Length: 194
Picture 1 (cartoon, rainbow, N blue to C red):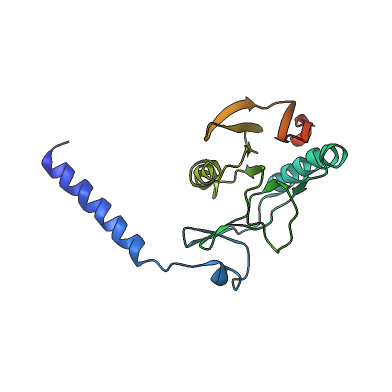
Picture 2: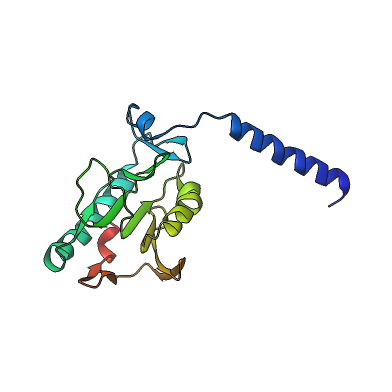
């Protein structure tokens, strides 16, 4: 890159950083006052509307059903949930499309990492789900991350290994999840798609 190109690039980066510093910084207290569905990442609100498309909702419902019975039969500590708030920190609240929580939920949100999350991609969230949230889930120690692409009918299963996500399966018909020492389940995932 020549000197002129470097100057333009540096100017662009400085302007972007300046714009970010000028954004309001919101907290969980602010988040609780908002109407509609939102996520809060590093103090920046992200709208989660309009509501997901029917294919997105059906995949989420089928994913929930796939986990519900095996968890009820095999694990006394873990529970499957449709979207609930996960308060990662005061300026970060996430709502995964589906999650498995090991431990009791005593508040209107969880304040500890779930053992598994799933995000069902939509055009407006795919970039955030594959990058920003991927990095957050990885750094927060979420053991399994499932990414579902409704358009491609593809499910990617990532497992945390030595602090990094590793792609361990694509479109498995079933998968064995080990959530903790007392909880291992085999889940039929082939029926998530119509």
